[in-house]
Image 1 (cartoon, rainbow, N blue to C red):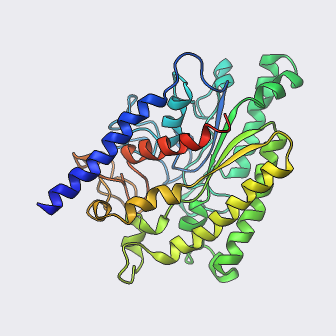
Image 2 (image 1 turned 180 degrees about the vertical axis):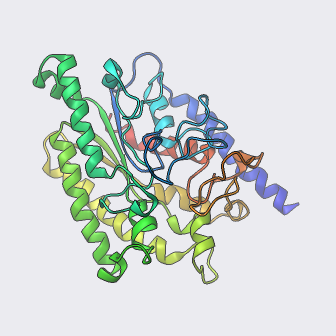
Length: 349
């Protein structure tokens, strides 16, 4: 009976989140003219589909709850980026850089790539990915096309200043770098504190590149509690804890520096309206709850990379799972996270 009540409690929370989500949806024109997305598999919409990598998911059961089916999204349905796009008032999902063409780039582009990180080598043990530096280079390609479409660089800059930019990255610099000593030497080179500092030095330069390219309204998303993912708890000793605490402690060293970076950017850069999104705090509420404990497992059978086995049927009660596979949230979790995040975003739009 207690187990049944816990499941209903979790379902109730998520149904409330989905219902209240609707009240924020905009009618008419989007709140910003365009929406640019940078990041990793948490927001990838298909940029890895044609790459030589094991980090791609353009096959069932991925997309089982997505209107277009399997698109390369690492989820059963929409990502947080997709839901935020809906909340911003966009009628269509922002196209991937792989598929974006013509004037549709004026609405925005998604550059995110599964397994990508702040560091260029991150995730490469899985194959090719588009690291953040390369994503920023791809954005320059988009900007050059926008200049052509709008007729001048000044017009393009004025337009880009009004757009919204989202960056969701950093998880792989830990999951697919620091905590994989068999492939990377970063954990022997740096203490967790040093590694967080090294990451932040590079990331701050990358964000400055984005600012110099015209970004003025931007959300920088913190790293979630990666030590609570099914992949982490299956691979590392939890020492009696619900999660792998050492992993969570490491990413919080990064998150604390990211908060400071956002404050510095807003203080020092003309016109900057940057916001820190506390994904760790949102997800941790459920990691600490009894409801989360019974649903910490993913919703599909996974392969050696923690991704769903192709064409295997997933669980039926997907709305009762925070995770879809070994590392990625389910759509219902993404909806809830996006709604909470959107409340923080409203002050910069």
